[in-house]
Length: 408
Image 1 (spheres, rainbow, N blue to C red):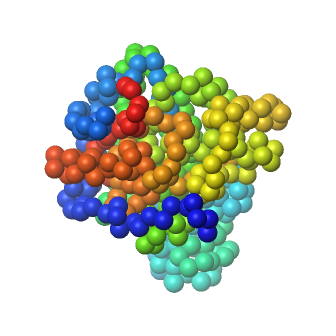
Image 2 (cartoon, rainbow, N blue to C red):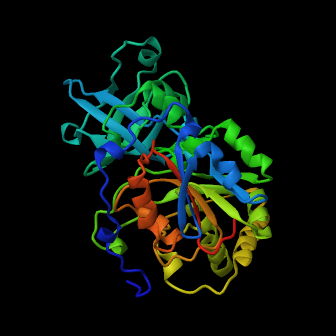
């Protein structure tokens, strides 16, 4: 292990989070949540609809427009045993867009509920309401391989319908397990951002759940340039770190894409506001993508510890320009790759100056990211939120964090 990889004890990022402080349901209005502002070391509170007035005018604001898919499916064996299948990522075809477009068969890596009851044989979709459209699909699942609680599952169906539509008809939205409830009708709308566009996530980029069209209009009136990235959020994003040392925690790979116009805007410089930790991970990964292209002529993704293993001599502009040159050489307008980047204290932020984010689980990689962003001042922020009745996690309240030394 490289000596420059930070040796961080995850127990140092614990805090008491009573169950009653976890928001089990969203508020009636998306923009009615509380908004904690952290700036110049001081903390105060607002309402989320006030957000536009608190942002630096003329800046760049970046959203993640991934869309949550109804990735949880309930099957039964011929014996009657129920098996829950939670789709994580496509295997064949391996590209999200191709897998969602498949019209008769595809395979996915999945989490298997009640896995010990399924060793072989086809599963049949549970259809308690005996809906005709579900019956006609005749969706079945076969286990191709297994590794503990996960496995590769092949889905087959009839009717030449794309798999994305099959999931919409047959699946349920996979709300986070810490909500301790089943998905309900309200989650179909509210566990999705207003601007969600590209299917692929199994968890919502929750910082964006607060935005209404009125707030977005207010952001634009401030002269703020709104741009999008797409990072498909994996199931591991919100999981607590299980190892004592963070250096032993494996980060999962998440695919992302950015377009030429955003890269050109980032090269111009200025204040960049990221909506959500997924946008931060995407934007900050770009530097290391550029470094890989400069050194090897290609980018196969960003490794977990790439930011910590050496001091890179390239400027942010040089790295971003390398990506643009790479796209030019291939005649592409979109840059797509994947990242396993972990952002922990000692990380050098090269692109993001301001962060909009929710309040995260104790001992999670997201708490580590927040701590890195505010130079270790996360306890002041979380203590204020706990003392002032803020609501926590996916359906909870929001925060606006200015990275120290950034002028608003």
